[in-house]
Image (tube, rainbow, N blue to C red):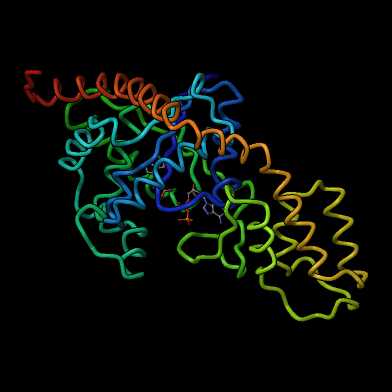
Amino acid sequence: MKKRILSGIQPSGRLHVGNWFGAIRQHVRLQEEGHDCFYFVANYHALTSTQDRERLTDSTRHIVMGYLALGIDPARSTLFLQSDVPQVVELAWFLNCVCPMGLLERATSYKDKVARGMMANVGLFAYPVLQAADITAYDANLVPVGADQKQHLEITRDLVGKLNQAYGAALLVEPEPFIVDAVAVVPGLDGQKMSKTYDNTIEVFVAPKATSKRVMQIVTDSTPLESPKDPATCNVYALLKLFATPEESAEIGDAYRRGGYGYGHAKKRLAELINEAFGPARERYTDLEAHPDHVDDVMREGGKKARAVAEATLARVREAAGILTHR
Ligand code: ADP
Ligand code: TRP
């Protein structure tokens, strides 16, 4: 059955291999399956953690171009910026007013971020409420997200129940999470989760040479070239498995165990595979960079479609709550 899919990504840096396997690949797949997909850049969410104007603007455009280059088709999916739908911020206020403090106090991502040194501002605290507004403004049925977002989806479902109960009507649709755990966690150069936060990423949209250089930095142990190696504990192999065919992965695994196959060989092959995999997307990205007006048109059209849907939701909610508007 055709579903309304919605997902968002924060513009906090450059897209990397973890974002592709953990999120964007599924977003493209859901579009290909014929669902009604809404994908947006969560730039208001990014304000909870940055005041760097230049970086925010660059990264917002980068994500839009990246989604287009990686296969999101604006003729079939609605691709837009959160900031082009101010109704979402308005809906967040309605949700704030039915949201018990305790619900947010229990949110682990807020606690984690503060523990990592981020400023404990009200926006960061209320982050899950804005996310609930993102989801419910568009009557989303299914929200593809990584496992780390599970709690935010639970909070969303809670808030839907509270708002509907407060006004005695089915104003908002309760979304189902669609937890993407197909590849679990993509490791970064140091073996930790690949993340901008750890500066251990392999970016998608860079020149082939830059990819090779990055791949050469993947941390390995110091087993000599001749000796047998264990593919199961090797970061290079973990990444290779994502890009190589099952046959090639098996062959390389055998070569590791046999010995005489060095980490340098594996890295060289990995860089080739990454460059092949993203080659066409990189070309499209370069083309989009040369046509900024086209990218603006996509955002304008996407924003327009998204706004119309969100406005219908807000009209329902304002009316039910007795909020008068004259516009
Ligand atoms: P980062 O950790 O680099 O800041 P984000 O939190 O912005 O990345 O992630 C955006 C999306 O990409 C999320 O859906 C997240 O689950 C997914 N993602 C990010 N890093 C990885 C990874 N290393 N493995 C799998 N998925 C990832
Ligand atoms: N919190 C999500 C993340 O960090 C991004 C996000 C914001 C989102 N609003 C959303 C994801 C709505 C799905 C639906 O990855």
